[in-house]
Length: 455
Ligand code: ADP
Image (cartoon, rainbow, N blue to C red):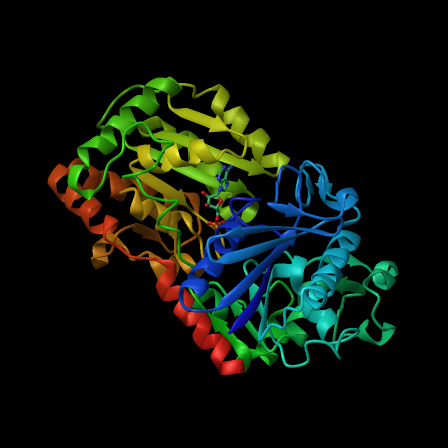
């Protein structure tokens, strides 16, 4: 089976969030299952392909060829989509160009895919183009759209419609129009042969008004072609026994060494070096989705008893709220407002518990990474978190709150602390969660099944 996999970010070449983790792992897992696969992404700043011409670059990474679409004017920028001040104003031009070029390059290199697999709004135009202006090329290819986060839809003003280069008839509510604007994700959903999202629970939730972000009707119409496939994590990237970024490697056999990480990190950050103080970590985009509103409301209270480390980047308003809290709580709270791979690894390794109070969560990867690092997730019961974290009181490996509020979050942290204080019980819990398996092998098989259904 030949697959063209298209994504605007692919780890380790470019990353702002979970999309990059998925795009940096799933294609390789599909290749291991026998697919012939090419990955297409933009040639951003700092990417050095093995081969480069005027139009694109190529790197062979293991069994997979990664093709980087080149346009120095559009892609050699400091960020992928925009700055904290806002999105780049020419994102429609940038991603229209990208998706057109993917088709042109596939023609040029004679790559005839059975499946074209697109991800989120940035590559949804590829699906739109292949069913409109390019409908006579790659006629037999089936088109898949994976929605990693419905909250980002690629919405642009109507007067830019000509940028897409497709007939004006598609600016209508059956196709791309959405409340008088262009909606790329909607177009992708309408034209795709199969749509999936990244967890079974989120696949159901997005068909409701509460989680559908205005597209619930379109998604309900598509419900026979809408699936949920749980993400996984790359166990070669996330492995505390080999991790180069952490202070001391450890595994389920020597969990005591996890506390060396805790101790050294506390010391380095100026936190009291106490083994018995619960250390809570969070690595996240700072967006409302992630529960920063309830966390910041409850944070002062949490810091009276526990230590917290947050690594994140996002909305200015949350930067400010968290910075203000940091000022008065230097001994118990450390805040890093940046994107930093190394620090992320240190947090996963050093903390006792990991916070995921997300208001909604398509899948969430951090809870799976946390399990691997013997760090107990504390999560809101929603989306992929509901599919991956069962409460300790139900024999699960995390702590779950159902009511989205700072009070329930705090109570749940307190419940975790009670178990944390019973050392033998806690150690048993840590041993159990390190054995959970969320590997890409199983997930890749589910994707192949999905491809077979539409082929
Ligand atoms: P989302 O894609 O919604 O941002 P996910 O949980 O699916 O959330 O994936 C987030 C990924 O990005 C995880 O690998 C997490 O560790 C990483 N991440 C998020 N923020 C940062 C940051 N500031 N620094 C380093 N890694 C980060």
